[in-house]
Amino acid sequence: MIKILEINPNSNDAMSLYRSRLPLIRLQKKYPKEIEFHPSARPGESSLEWDYLNIFDIVYITRPTGHHAVQIIEACKRFKIPVWVDFDDLLTDIPLDNPAHTMMNKANINEYVNKVLDGCTFATFSTPYLMNKMGKNILQKSYVVPNALDLEMFSRPAMLGMSKKVFWRGSNTHERDLWEFHVPLRDILRKSQSVDKSGYILELMGGLKPIYIYDYVDVLYTGYKQKNEYFDYLTNVNGKINIVPLSHRTEEIDFNKSKSNISWIETTYGGMVSLAPDWEEWQKPGIINYTSKQDFGDKLIAMMEGKYNLEKLRQQSWQYIRENLTLDKTNEVRYELIRKYLKR
Image 1 (spheres, rainbow, N blue to C red):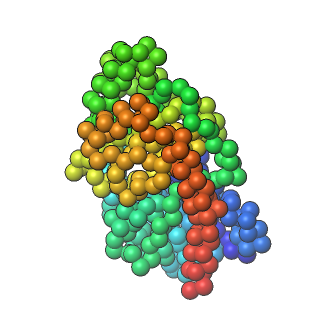
Image 2 (image 1 turned 45 degrees about the vertical axis):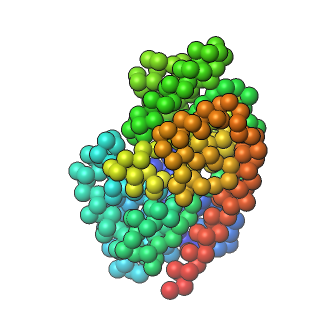
């Protein structure tokens, strides 16, 4: 029996759903005679003494960014316990206007992350770009495990929505991204609404209420939702278009290029077609890619005017996700990595 200790700063957030708690639950369920996972107290709430660590065969730490993680890794090395670490964002290069920038800088995060990556047994990352940036000095023990959808929980996607709705999901950490594209977005929606009272409406989900948009066009606001209701809500959005405006400024480019395409996965499940950057992570079947703000606007208009077969694109995306980006498939990679490093 392989006993895995999971150290997770937030067992109820999206990354726990995609990258830690749920994947480990599914691994244990699929290999009940081989894998047994144990959730720990949150980092900082337990010292995780040597006698407790030695119960386990491998320690998994998601988003390890502080002194506590470094201490755990040092203890595990002392007792020859493999440590697997996982990252989903470029935490070592957070843009200045991101709300997390100041907090991470004060915490000396780069110093700790470098120690974590140097000391871990192996590391997994959500995208190739993130791995090549964040794990550039440890590529020999770095692997990509993409975010994926658990079809055991989410097996019935919505059909293409019937309402004229442009959908955006994100928190205040994405305000700079939305700001960069707000002029073409605002102008296109204003024209649509002025020509036709039943024109396209923008739905912003996540709590952001930008005055530079809602002063000009009709906007529907949807607040933050817990994951247990989030996916149910997605399947009832009844929208056609999901937009992924990501800043192309030099200050944000590496951080944004490192991001996963989870917005596409989620909103494809919700019955929408995504308009996203023309970057490797987003060059997937069914996605319409833009290269600039002008191209973003032009393609958004074309999508709204029916110049793309959105239902066909939605089907292409869902087929690709079902064949390549399911939790069952990504867990095969996790399983092989666990076995590989326990043999050493």
